[in-house]
Image (cartoon, rainbow, N blue to C red):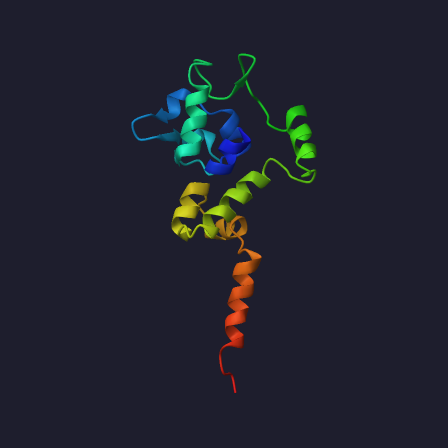
Length: 153
């Protein structure tokens, strides 16, 4: 589920409530209805090769929900397994919601347009998208380094 979140930017409730009925298999997308999204609008969640393989591994495990444990819907990610995994990875301060921020930053680093990042994150406000897609330090350093090459005299 964590890997799926890193590649889709889904919120925890969107991820744990993901249903097979929301899948459009031919288009390799899920369409989350507005009553399940924070901004109340339908949201398209495109699948890449990694998320497609995760979905295929889940297929047939449950009739309604994509992500389950012992035949039951997973209600929260922030449980014992998450805390153990964080400790093993030495990421004790990492919250489930940080996966969304990582998704946004990775999109920006990959050169994905602002508009597409906004749609992929499901934001109405561009201010919020900016919050999720902060510039990488190297990008900022390169920007200020350009000043050293300009004759300001």
